[in-house]
Figure 1 (spheres, rainbow, N blue to C red):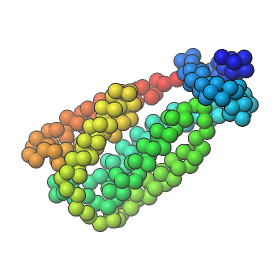
Figure 2: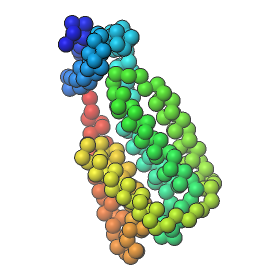
Figure 3: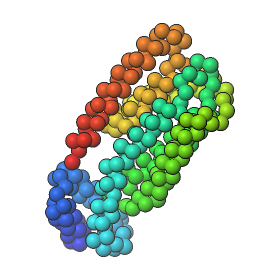
Figure 4: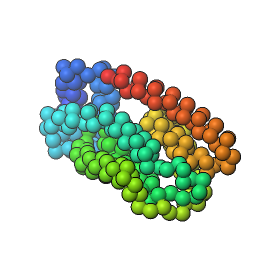
Length: 236
């Protein structure tokens, strides 16, 4: 490690220790920046020269991103949970149909929110995510608009969506759930289970069995929400 890079790491450690961050979080920040040193080493430069920023500016970027990184999964989960609950009309599934507002959410809002979520995670503490914050704010405005439109029954018509379309969403929910458990990102598990609950009628034709399966999914979802809430509230 270069001398200036080592000084930068020490400055980061001293600053955030003084700010009262937990040792685990400080170690995580230092680990991320040490990995990022590979980029500056590849061009044979000190990290601050590679970034074109002073140590103070780099620390300021990290400090700003800490708040965004902590809120990112929570906002992602709450936003999509509310929209799926409110906009995905379960009653249309047995009739192989879906509202236009449901299709808009599934094809536009959900993928875009995942892209923003992933971009913030990828940039982590070290790079500005101002663009992502603005796009996230725009998604929030669109989400509020969709909720109000649905509340006043402006659902952009009803469209034919075959049973296979709803089954595809069910499988997406399964993949989200597995991904969330495996990578310990329970926000994806919660969203995945809710997608499964909304589309289970496309998988099980018997109404009684479908209702039983829906209850089981709700029970699993409740466990995930309780555990996720405890984990978020105890995060330091």
